[in-house]
Image (cartoon, rainbow, N blue to C red; front, side):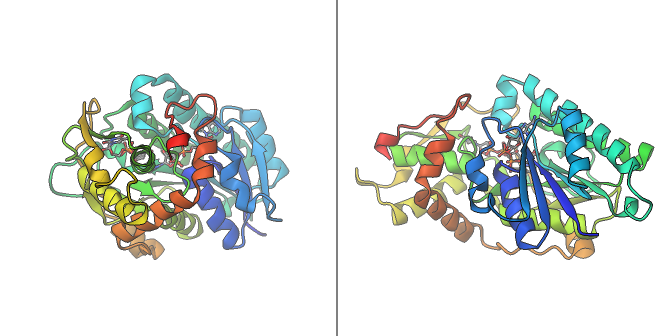
Length: 354
Ligand code: NAD
Ligand code: TDX
């Protein structure tokens, strides 16, 4: 029986990169996405006409639609990426995060369990519900140590608390109902198609406009950067080889201070697109009020995934991955213009200056 993969959040940053990989690997994929301010059909344009790809516009809170989609397409694996994903947005408006991330995941679990109960005895053991989560559920690290699958949860932002709550629901559905669930926790992703509210693309477009580059606090907070294609490969491996009830962490082995990321970004832009006004893009760096409750450091030990899933990092050098990413944004300015020009989008750029 072929694997039919349903991907929630397929039109978002990581979801669309995952769909691309799964199609390349030969799987049939059903993309399921509500197309919020962060989800875009443009992200699926390259494979929209792929014979093995189907798109359903739907909300994860719509349990009936989700169940009927699972039934109609005889789905055998679910990869759940859909979420409200921006920490700053969760601070100014936490309600949407509880609604989508907690209630939405609950709704999917209810529908997935009903679908699972109706599968044949040969299909049941092969069904998987993979929930994509974040390293932020573990809280923050001091200067040393790394998060792993055994780190206790200690979320600090409304975003990470809502993700932690959804992880615990997924865990409970495995233990109580026997739904074959897997959880993955990943560090900060970078790469093509990331919505420009997040650090890297936001800095690129501020720089191109000649606007200040807003570094929170002193820029000393540390993130572990993973290329989105490595994360996508990890999730696919977890579906193919992971054990139900287990969790797997993925990191990039590339810890950087935010200020160092912005410096690297400016140097690359200086090389690829020198400022017409002269000088370096670094001159635009501006230190602004810190994010409330800003976690100091994240870092992931992904040796379990390496050992048990055969996970390897393809993007070993963050600065060269960053350069490739910046080059992608520079050659896809029309994409950025379209995705930031939709209703409900908080970031806005003056495209006449870019
Ligand atoms: P994103 O914001 O780019 O995309 C989210 C997608 O989910 C969008 O396409 C949006 O339309 C869709 N969506 C939102 N609410 C929905 C709803 N109610 N019903 C259906 N679809 C809905 O996010 P991303 O950065 O691609 O993150 C994807 C997942 O990976 C999230 O679960 C996030 O928590 C997790 N994650 C992200 C990172 C990161 O660095 N970006 C790191 C670790 C984990
Ligand atoms: O303008 C900015 N200036 C700044 O200094 C922005 C947008 C961010 N920052 C800082 C805050 C963080 O320390 O940069 C770091 C990265 O910020 P974000 O890109 O907003 O990511 P982060 O808050 O670390 O969360 C991301 O990684 C984990 C994703 O958005 C989450 O979905 C994921 O779970």
